[in-house]
Length: 82
Image (tube, rainbow, N blue to C red; front, side):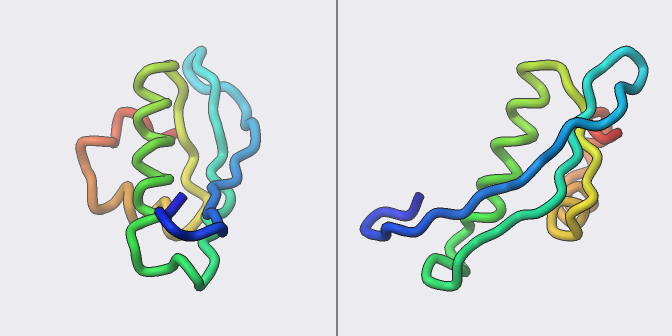
């Protein structure tokens, strides 16, 4: 959430087929309303998903083009990519 705003962004994911014994979450869509766009909300959502994957030991399949782009920009996330 952006301070002073009522709208929120969100990242939709759905369960995928397990890989190498690990749960897979398919990152399907990153949605950020225009009112809060351009403030790093989408990036923060992806970073949170990656942090959760590291803590909870699951993999991410980046079907969302934004999530895929963030994985390309962050090669250190490669071990978390399904």
